Image 1 (tube, helix red, strand yellow):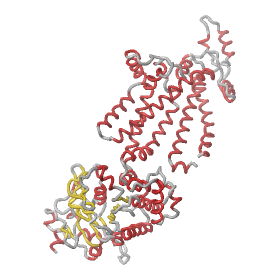
Image 2: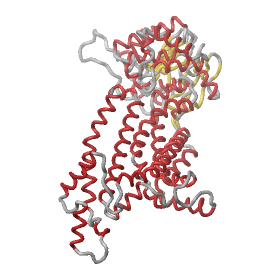
Image 3: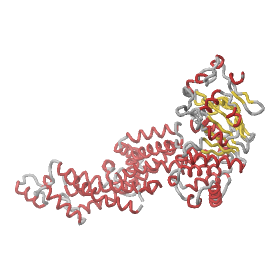
Image 4: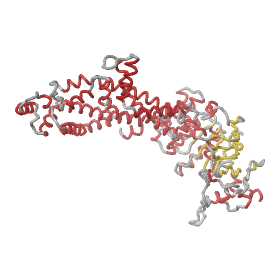
Length: 308
Length: 317
């Protein structure tokens, strides 16, 4: 198990290299550059060249990449061209808000989703199942920003139970978590339901019934454990989403966060900041997948042995 | 009688894949149920276990009397107390019958803890004892293994141990050897026979292997298309098979003195539940078919000897 984890960690190095290449070149493919945002109206071409030289933007892309990569290896993400502050400081200031919302939304959607999936599967074909399946369909089609707006309207504006926007205290977190988590609930519930139903059809479940075990014990202690394998897979893909997936929600609720930081940086063509944010998000996705692999291997005794 | 099935009819929607099944098994007795795939053997077993609703079926008519009590219409809660306790099931495929994510031992413990009210440690001790009885080498270390670490034969012994854990009086073994190597098959059948002789269990042994029937059974019910066509003592069945279907089945057993290339088979296939012929269900494949067989369904008449046949031709003979 430890060997497996170490091997997977080593494999992260080439992945990191490819990600850094893509992150760097993709932003330079976008037309425009940060200098436009720094120049005052009526500036001369000489001033333009001066600024380009100051940030190293006059050199070739390869050179710029090598410089950036060299600094990155020493842990330096560079300095924001527009804001003039270290990229790492900007990320560090915004990251807690993203983490707070992302982790809460992930926990909320996972727990609610699994519960809904188990209940739907246990009452398969009944009205309970139909109702939950209906909500799943609704949850996967309703856009989260629209839901966010509706939640604000009802619970903040009309009822006044929670703040309309901002990120002060846990009460300002409730609506964003619901809005951001709904899609996740639907996804987790759907996968849990199907996996539970498929597992229930296996021979060993019939034999558990033949032992006279109560159905809820069979569902929770045996079937759910098998059904969690695909659920862990989709969850591991959502761990990366925890950090960057809630951009629209951050906008709707006027919350700070990595998503808003990235969008602003993109609009201003703030290359170092865009690269820093994208790199963070990409690494979150990769590490999420890694965690998922490890958890899955730990869950299934056959995999545990094959990968030991 | 330990178990008495009387005119049992199983229904799935509009179809009755099992009908008019009458058979019985006593303590210390092995009743074989033989027949081709689709003859309703496994459904009959599922019905006795009370698990038909799990697969979308129900009992439409008849009785299942276990130790004098009718199981048909018994509340699920009471059925669950019998299931895995006084009545236990051994399934066909040991590869898929165990929970692959759970260690072997606790899977055996379950029935003892549930039905005998044993503590964790008492159940463990009982499981280890059962495993030793079933000649599983080194039970204490096998107890902590996962199913994929065992061979098919060993897994089937585990399934048998699981069935015995609740101290059953009736065992239903649904093709317990079909998925196993021939060499292992004989061992598993021998284990089952020993259990019946030593513990006085009643055993229903479902198989399509006439060799297993000859080796193990006391009495045999031959099923075709959801009906019992012949019920007989095992010696009588092999020496004087009365139903043309039984005769054909016995002819299909390969013997070493047969000339090469003369394997015998029953022509045609088992008709589906939706396309049952009128009259005797075997008539399209029967060598001795008479006009009457195409119209009138023969009924199983069980004599005082406990033997019986459902065939117009055999009755006339």
